[in-house]
Image (cartoon, rainbow, N blue to C red):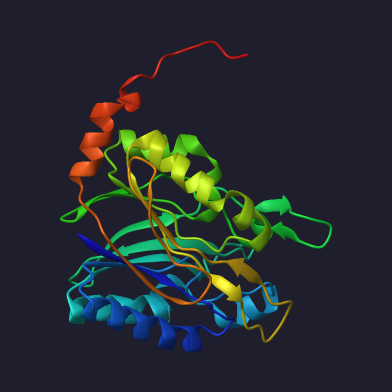
Amino acid sequence: MKAALLQLTSGDDPAVNLVRTLDLVRQAAQSGAEIILTPEVTNCVSSSRAQQNAALQLEADDQTLAALRAEAKVLGVWISIGSLALKTGDPDGRFANRSFLISDQGDVIARYDKIHMFDVDVSATEVYRESAGYRPGTRAVIADTPLGVLGLSICYDLRFAYLYRDLAQAGAQILLVPSAFSVVTGAAHWEPLLRARAIETGCFVLAAAQTGVHPASRGAPRETYGHSLAVDPWGNVLADGGAAPGITMVDLDLTAVSDARKRIAALDHDRDYAGP
């Protein structure tokens, strides 16, 4: 299977972001990709609640979702929309950070709402409170497709190994980790965590990322780490997208999953134990 990881520098205008995303999707399809993966918050990267309220839509009205569904059907490719920031109609006004898996017929095969919220103090000047603007999801999701069994996750989920173990034990062969990692934590933890999740589960890990300084019409501009990665089930990095926007192509042979799990069958070795 040939996969394409799209690396974007999305700003806070979904219409502008969509033009660039569609251009890269078409280029990836022309290069032979069977599945195309976009990063977290493909449609809108913003630190301003006012801008998000002005720019975001409900799922049924979202132009990015509609356009990528149509494009998947036209091109005959699968598309993983890493996530879209969406209005929900919740009384508290919080949004959803929602991933979509789109079939080559343009159908939504799976949805996943990010479970773990990025509420951290990276430094005195870099503070995030994702839960203030987004409601957390409550359900893990896998999707059985002709390309393999995919396990869905988003960004900060990466730090919670139990989620990926559950996905793998439910049948996932490929773990998706679309992200908008901060520069500081990305440089320190991005590659080690992705490789660890692959090694622990015997899965391929595909992580399409946002990168660079993101244009902002309101609020402070965000900066993200980039380095979209593809990791094989033995923990080897197959491809690194670097720091520039673009496309990273990678070939996957799913027999590597069964081979890795035969060599180290850790997924079958769980034991009950008393807590500390």
